[in-house]
Length: 332
Image (tube, rainbow, N blue to C red; front, side, top):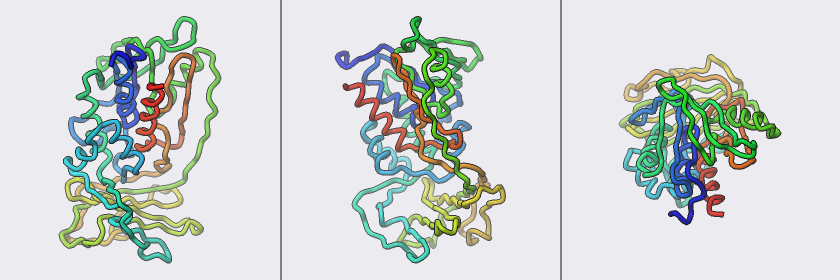
């Protein structure tokens, strides 16, 4: 391992999907990797305040699933053992759209997994926590990146620990996976480097989500349903996928954001054996556009920032592919 090392310590800000994957990618090239997370991290697959979109439907696309499997060998086995539901891509999810009721189905030859966002993160976090040279520190809030004396790179990260005391971590590399980009922007300003160009995409979508127990008499020929309206008519749509624990998660969306979108008898047929297990979650505003949670990495005088002020949800596929790219660059 010593022949592959490029630095003593890397610091990752954020223990979401991007931060965890980045930490694993860096672990082969630094003596020690420290992950700072401002949340109190749950011991199981539970929601946390730093991932507000986790209560809505999530899924892993093929690229994200493959990237996580590369970083964490046996990842798919871990998913299945934790209760994730295997889906035959192209066959197990019924797609409905006007004129195609349903859309033709065919087995495309590979397996995807359906589960809650907290379960995905819990499995990845567990693998990272067991890695010998990675330390995750929760309830730690990053304050600013300390530049080198000549301003040509990073020297340390200043943060506030769980007791409210200030600490400084030496760092050869800092990865800002907080999902906000403020840390990176402040660093670039402090060393008088030009801010990267930012593209903002506004999305006017309202959505609501509920979790249901899967009824005993559910259809046997599909595991999930996706209903897509006509784009020209700006109609709404919905996606229902299975979760661990014999549950369905249903998210309905409307093309115009509204606080009045709800899930109830008017939108979902009431069945005695199909009732919500918990209260409905409502949300209004931007949908989860795919964006880089890993907003920047800083080494020497380089600074890259990709952020969106109109999206809170991250894309697991992009986050993990970012981590794979870190591994590739480190090898170079």
